[in-house]
Image (cartoon, rainbow, N blue to C red; front, side, top):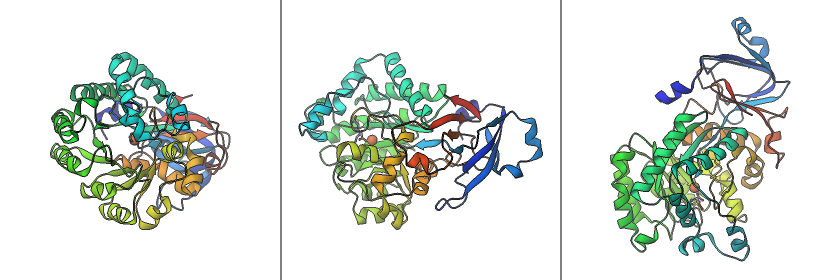
Amino acid sequence: MSPRDEGLAPAGELVLRNVGQLVTMAGQAVPFAVEAHAALWLVGGRVQYAGPESGLPPAAAKSPTVDVGGRLATPGLVDAHTHLLYAGQRAQEVALRARGAGYLEMLQAGGGILATVAATNAASDSEVLDATRRRLSEALRAGTTTLELKTGYALDPAGELRLLGLAERLRDEGPMRLVLTYLGAHALPASHAGQPGRFLEELATTHAAVAGRAQFVDVFLEPGVFGPAEVDPYLADARRHGLAVKVHVDELQDGGGAALAARWGAVSADHCAYTSPAGIAALQAAGTVAVLLPGTAGYLHPEHMAPARQFLEAGVPIAIGSDGNPGSSPTSCLGTLLPWAAAWLHLTPEEVWTAVTRGGARAVGRTDVGQLTPGSWGDVVVWDADDYRVPCYRYGTNLVQAVYVSGRQVAP
Ligand code: NIG
Ligand code: FE
């Protein structure tokens, strides 16, 4: 727990009663137990009791109480992978893609990520902050209470540090819990065309300033973007500065990224759409979480999804993130992706819930969120549904009725 989390926690108490189904993610996650006729008692922003309403301790009677009308309550969602810190938008890419333009082709022509870099670098601090605040509040309204936020739309050392400073301001504002990742290595800027090694060497000079501010460093490892030759020394430097590692791997083809992520003891390997059985085995051995991003795969290559079942069968923990970004997954709302995660990754509702709560928490290195067990933060979503399978089934509507962070209602 960081001191900032202490700051977010109110002293207030709250009872949610008449919870038709309560998903706590306690114990072994799959298959998980669902409490019927449940109640939740939050004290000092944390879970004091989660279980059958009949077992609610008598002392809870003194706390303010909300009757949730038989609805479903779950842990707040943990979105372990987003790029929501940027200015501008890229709606013009829809028609380009319809005419056959590829993701890397647009990037190599100076569009894609580089177009958002130009827009973000041209925007003032308050423009970037306001645009990002709007996205974070959409995410919160759709049930995300912890969100990993990456830099990566400046692509030069000073600009990436500016974005990190803006991300810290957003984290300190709350109410969402933000986990910060430094993704200066998101693409190769035109100024360094043909010199990825030199670019990452220059970027590594910022690591001393990043340490203690971002929790993770991340790299877009993909044939045509950055490869192992330049990524290995870059990650070695990040590790020397005490930064934990995440890596974008195997998004568009199997580039051997999973094995590299495992070699660096990455907390997570993200995308993994094309990861091979050998890569899956390497992640398992390293205890690395595979963060699967079905929104992105659905947007760019719906014919090919990450082999989610193979990860689970191999014993690799999975998380599901939104990958919210202006190009390959223009959304802020993990909560509205649950039906697609189930359908496209061939996962059961139990597996989807696990991946967007405890799985997400593990992928961002936390054990105090993503579950409603005594001592965890009281981050709760009440859904306009009476059954935990409904949010993995109905699509196109936001089913979130109310969102609480540290026991305080923060949305709507
Ligand atoms: O995870 N792959 C690299 N980064 C993002 C896309 C960012 C963008 O297109 O702006 C991703 O898909
Ligand atoms: Fe990403």
